[in-house]
Length: 299
Image (cartoon, rainbow, N blue to C red; front, side, top):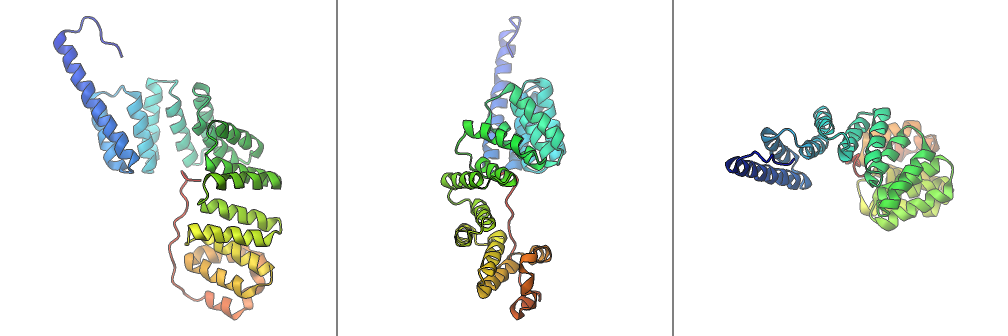
């Protein structure tokens, strides 16, 4: 915003002080948000908006902070204010799309990401999130195209390589899926869930020794890991290694008993173990270790 020539010297100095105040609190809010101190960041943004409600970047940053807090309705309002003030604000359209995606409103999310890309076609974040929504919608070829666009702009985005592999496997493109997951692990070798997916992929390809090695690598990066233990149980059983399979099942039940029971009921590949004395003992009460699931923003 430009100052009008008719402003007096006193008025201009006062406005400059106001801008300094706003900028200070805005920067503090961004720094606190980067540190994960979202509630404190929010108070800084609100202080800025008390002085001037016509600053789209503050509304946008406030929206992202509210999204981190899971306060989606308030976040949507903030992004809406930013877009009203600046209709071509790509970052605000991206934020609004993320909110719709969090609320499982895929069509609305896709529309927002497309609008964001209209104003910032080189933004890898919009391409990546667009791909994630297309995966949910089952539009795998289109999702791969979006991930490719994201990776063209940020090749080190290991999550994009991972989700690209998921799409390719869904289309029975086994070799291409394995190539993508291997690139993801080259970029981020300690990505436990990518190792799990690699193990599952090898399992489906009947390459059981490689699957077992992948699940073990995943466990080396995340000990409390239900998917890896369950994958090991299935691989060892198919190799006739009953004791090792039961060891892995026991570890899975220790990680999360409720989820393990659900998996057991839907997994026909291990049902032959139901009469084994060691498995029967697993059905009795056992201590449960809380598994921390991977958040929507990491995968």
